[in-house]
Image (tube, rainbow, N blue to C red; front, top):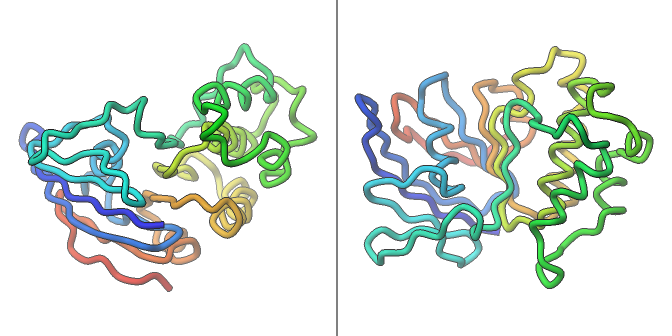
Length: 218
């Protein structure tokens, strides 16, 4: 599990210059609001095309501006979990999960539906509508949907920021289980030091669009 990221671009008055490598199961991008954390993972996801950049995940080159390589987002096999769960309100939990499976061809599928349900303890929720779920439950379903797309990399952009402390404590053990059992490298964005210390094997510190340091986690 390895990731290499280099991105240099200008977004209006904001300049982004990020460069780091990691072999950790969870790489945390940490820093205050406006540091450029989300811009970096959008480069990884293919949602932002930098002026200069290179992204390599486990030897697969997703972006290399010098070589003229830019894989579109739908071909990168990168899962993305947002601050809000973004579930389909008209679908049950089961059908939301199965929507993720739609994006994974049979030969690329790494994990079964049953394995994801067990990993995230979703069995009791499968027939429920998403409106009846707590915030923590919705985020677990969103994570499950991303996993069922069988990504080579999972991006998580402040996935606990919309939750109160009780719900954060509910979800955190599942994030730890995901780190230890899923076998998929994770890039985890947060401005909360306690989260990144608990989860990550490497912490990339950002401020004002620049990487200040990339240190082993605690």
